[in-house]
Image 1 (cartoon, rainbow, N blue to C red):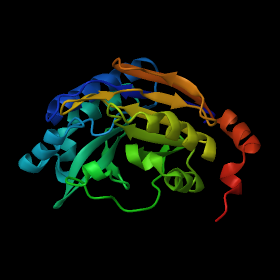
Image 2 (image 1 turned 60 degrees about the vertical axis):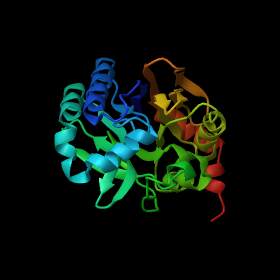
Image 3 (image 1 turned 180 degrees about the vertical axis):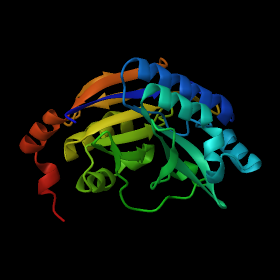
Image 4 (image 1 turned 90 degrees about the vertical axis):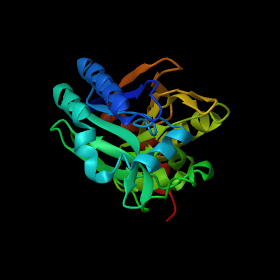
Length: 262
């Protein structure tokens, strides 16, 4: 595999309604498949909406729960099969008594896996969420090594560095930038790309968190942090082809990832 067509997707979810948002994710997946996309990255907490009241509702209803993922995601799994596309979609997820922010991996074979739990939980999120286990997770998507991350994770250089050291070529970030917090998107995502010689694919949330707008900005960045595709506040897909020959060339020229002190 010398290239991979990817998309970062965004749409306005229905806060507190996982069933409606699974259908929305399935629609984005079908759109991606029509364009030949093989990896789709969706925003943070997409299956519930990134919203405090929606997080309360997860506690109240006991859903989504790790043991019920296949039933909940059935329309999305069917869409992934139809599209031939791997989908990374983030959701609050109850694991026993703990609630995590989790990246689900939905494969073109119709399987779903709770693959990654957010490690760096923002202080505003601590009333609901427990940090996940430390250490990189690297997935194989058609021979390309993809490391999931969730929003605040990307503000910590060591998180992406550990992923790169574990072989990641793509840093796949599910994000939600509330109004007033977009500096992190502007600085951190390009820095993680350049520091580690990795592509960045970031699906960014839209909608509202209480009365605060969520700003979108889904993007695909090359291994030097340049934009390959970007969205503003409109729903849709930012689609780009990741050229792995370019990644090898950048890593040979920009050697920070190899020169990092242990």
